Amino acid sequence: MVSLLSAEDRKAALATIPGWAEVEAGKALSRTFVFKDFNAAFGFMTRAALVAEKHDHHPDWRNVYKTVEVTLSTHDAGGVSARDIALAKAMNAIATSLGI
Image 1 (cartoon, one colour):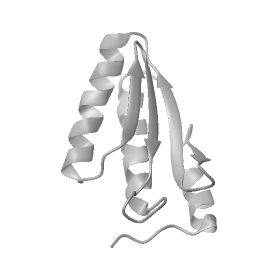
Image 2: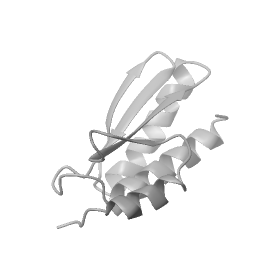
Image 3: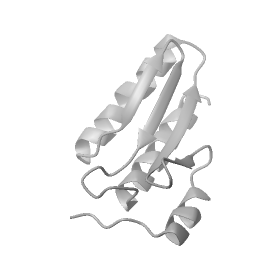
Image 4: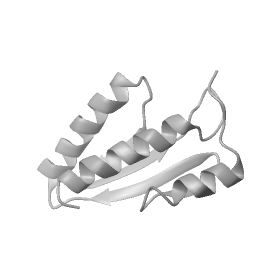
């Protein structure tokens, strides 16, 4: 089973992933990405899905036109783990490579 991050560890990790915030009383992380158009948003989701599948750790997300809302939580552990931080960092890198 995956270990949850302490409140101190979550705070320190959040400092390394710009744009992300704690939600659900610290049990999840959330970020909204806004791209230039639907094609860029869908490209982001496709690339992020490949990373998520590789690590068997999948986001809760929603896409409307050029906006992608993402929530990360390690559901089987009941909160935020290092897996969520790693996926958030990967998503930020993908978004940066797409110009946001």
